[in-house]
Every structure is written in C-alpha cells, then in structure tokens.
Length: 218
Picture 1 (tube, one colour):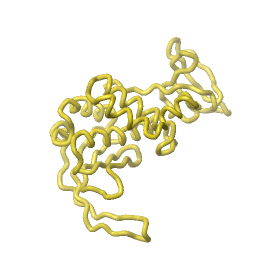
Picture 2 (tube, helix red, strand yellow):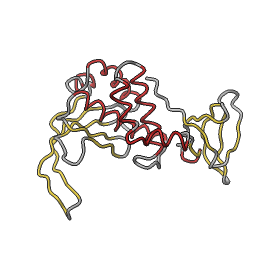
Picture 3 (tube, rainbow, N blue to C red):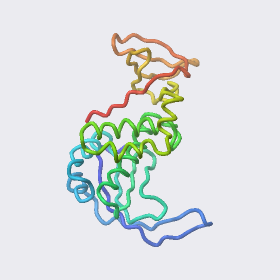
C-alpha cells in the first residue's frame, strides 16, 4: 500500500468494447496532487473535508477522479485504488466515496470477502454511522443506502454480524466473550490469539465466531 494517499485526475479516452464484455481505456493522467484538501475541496461538501482527509491519511489509497464511466459511478480495485466519476454533485460524490472506501476497509479486515457480502455491509454500516454521529451526513439520506433493499437489516437479524475468526486478517482485533483479542496465525488446525487485557495466549477453532473491531479513529 502507498505510504500516503494521493489524488489523480485521469482522462479516459479511446473506449473500445471487446467481445461485448470487456472495455479498455487509454489513459492520460492530467495531474496528480498530494495535498488532499486542495484536490478534494471542489468535489466534497465543505463540512466533510476534515473527516475525509483524516480517513485517507489513516488508510492510504490512490483516489482517481476520472472521466465518467457509463457502467458505474465508482470502483475499488485491490484494496488500494478507488475511482470516482468527476461529474457527480458533492453529496453524491461523498456517498460514492464512502461506499468505495468501505470496500477498502473490508479488504483490510477480511482479505477474501465477497464484493457485497455480509463483511462489506458490516464495514459500510460502521463507516456511515461514524459520519452520521459527527453530523457530517444526515441519517435520512444515508441509512437507506446502507439498508438497500433491506439487506442490512436482514443480515443483522439472521447473522448478527459475527464472523468466523478464520475470515479476519492476521493481526486484526476482534471481540470474543466480551474481551478484545488479536487474531494470530493458524497452526495445526487452530488459530493463535492474544487477549489484550492480560496478554494471555489461547487457541481458537477457525470457525469460532467473533465480532471484528474496526479502527475508525482518525
């Protein structure tokens, strides 16, 4: 991952369709700015700038602001690159950025998670609630996005957002029996863990259910 976030302004041209499925682009990077505030100010609501800049400094990513793609408003690739169309209004740009950034946080927490699986909804909900609690975005505007088609409420009701510890990235924290543990490496069919309260060591079955702890303090 990059040592720091950056913003790239990218012009996409010469679009070609191949086999009616894949679309290729010839790219020309117009400008790269490392001052996140300066680069993002024209695209984001003013009250969100501090939070977004701090977020991107906490978990660095390359943000590509691109000529609009017809097939999507944004994307996240490999957990390090986020692309967003440059023709969105500020509120829409923020909502797409948070959606794609939730993919990045999901990747950092659950390396093998499905694109829009339970893991993503867990991370997206946590990220959105942080912005709501800080009065940066409105609950009325953004909770329907999280609860799209009732997916979030269904998943929370039926799965409780507990995950097998084997799905969590090594080194990440999780809650197990009301204690915070650090997920270690697996050995001989078990996963080594350290309890933070007293540094005691234990071994858990890979299917032991835990609640991931997302570090959203920036």
